[in-house]
Amino acid sequence: MEELLLKFTRYLEGERKASKYTVRNYQNDLRPFIAFAAKRGVSTPDGVDRAVIRAYLGALMVDKVSKRSIARKLSAIRSFYRFMNIMGYASGNAAASASSPKLDRRLPDFLPEDSTKLLLEAPDISTPLGIRDRAIVEIIYAAGLRVSEAAGLNTSDINMKERELRVMGKGSKERITIIGKLGRHWLSEYMKTVRPELLKKQQNVALFLNNNGRRISVRAIQMIIKRYSKLVGLSNGVHTHTLRHTYATHMLDGGADLRVVQELMGHASLSTTQIYMHVTQAQARKVYLSAHPLAKNQATPDKIEKLVSGNEDTSY
Image (tube, rainbow, N blue to C red; front, side, top):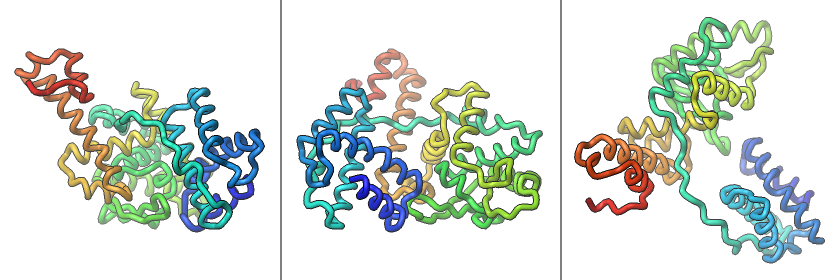
C-alpha cells in the first residue's frame, strides 16, 4: 500500500500538476489510513472492505477528529482508490459507499474594511523589510491571492503599466488578476529600492525575496501575516487565506459580478465563489436588523443572531 501511495503521489505531481502542498496533504491523510489497515492485517488494496472503512472512521471519531477533517480524509481515500482502479491496482472502492459526516455550514472569515486597513498599514515602511512586507500584504489582498501564489510570483509575472499579475494557481492553471493603484505603488517601491538590496549580486527570478536573496517561503509569508495581525490587535485566527476571503467579500459587497470574482480568484466552480454571497447576505441582514428603526424595535440581539443563522421565523 505504501508503494502504491508513492505511485499515487507521482501521478498527482505528473498528471494532475498538483502543488507540493496538495501532495503533502494527500500523504498526511492517507498514511494514517494505510497504517490503520496494516494493524488489522490488511496490506493490499482489495483487502480493504466496508468494515475496515467504518472502523477507521469510528476510530477518528473516538479521537475527536473534526467532522471536516474526517470528510477530507474519506475524500482522499476515495481519490486514492479511483487512481488504483484506473491503473488496475484495485478492483473495488470500499470508500465509495461510505457516508461522510454531515458538515455544519461554515462561512469564510473575513476582515471589515477598518481592520483590513490596520493590517495593510502595520509594516514599518521606514525599513527595507517593512516595505517588502507591505508589498506582500497589499498584493495578497489586492489580488485575492493564495499564499502559494504570492510566494510563487516571478518578476516576469508583473505588468506595472496595466496593473496585472500573471498567477499560477491550483493545478498549474494560469490566470491574470488585477491590483489597485496602492498595490502597484508598494510593489514598485519594493522592486526599485528593496529587492536589489536583498538580491545583492545573485540571480533570481523570484519576486519576493528573503534576507538571503532567495525566494521567500510560504511559511515565511504566513508568519508575516500572523505577526502583523497580532501587532495591530486582530484575532489570532487571521491568516493569509483570511485576506483572500476578505478580497472576495469586499469585491461582492462593492457590487462586483459573481463570475468576474470567480475568474479573478481562479475558482474552478462558481459554487465555491457563491459561498461569499452567503457572507455578504448575512452581513447585510445583520446590519439592517441592527440599524433600521422598525427592525431595532422588534428584534432583540438574541433574535438578530437567530435571524442571521436562519433559525428564526422572519415573517414580521
